[in-house]
Length: 253
Ligand SMILES: C[S@@+](CC[C@H](N)C(=O)[O-])C[C@H]1O[C@@H](n2cnc3c(N)ncnc32)[C@H](O)[C@@H]1O
Image 1 (cartoon, rainbow, N blue to C red):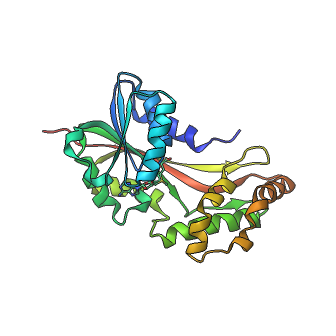
Image 2: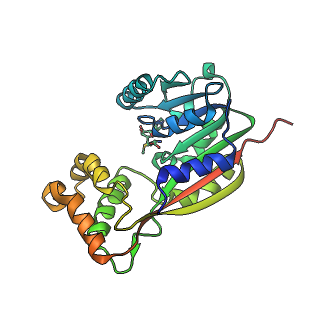
Image 3: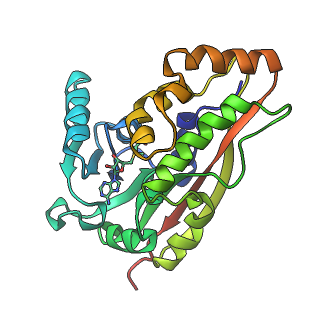
């Protein structure tokens, strides 16, 4: 059975030492997918503050927290590099697929490190398009879908190689990198990654940036066509690499 992105993230948080009772800042939290994973881990004695600059996504995150009756999460609207000092200092900062969207990832890291206690942790998971998509034999539709999504985020200014850039950026921001890893997102005829839902969610942006037209994507039949291609080829498809790293803010001397 291939691993999901969440399973990789859980292992990263575990290995980095994100534990019960910690105060954690989750940056670029969007609608809270990672924030809720962290909230479960820090438990009732800990707390997670999710920060994002998109108020609509934050409303969704708050509604989800309320639905789940979570009292150990709060969400604030801010730029991740300018978290208000009244939030206090955190034991750790987490983030997933966020640094790739910063015009200057090192400057963003420097800004958010101000919110971390001396000796505190900074843990990120970032995607990378340097390797993949790969499969034997090739899966042309899978490759095309991957190309549409990567080209779109690239036109929005994203760094498609943030995975490889992650550990060096942390060091340049004055952090001490303790661990870096890369894992592959795999699909098989039985294991599916949410390619079609991601394409559907990105459709207006893909069209707006002139990467592909709705007709080219054939969105109504995309799930079935992807599954058919993978099943017929009976192969394993590697879409992208996911890098994880954690680093520590130097202790005050
Ligand atoms: C791909 S989503 C991340 C999703 C989320 N971390 C998760 O794992 O489900 C990127 C998010 O980062 C937010 N973001 C990007 N740059 C930001 C910044 N400088 N300050 C605050 N939020 C930012 C965007 O608004 C968006 O919600």
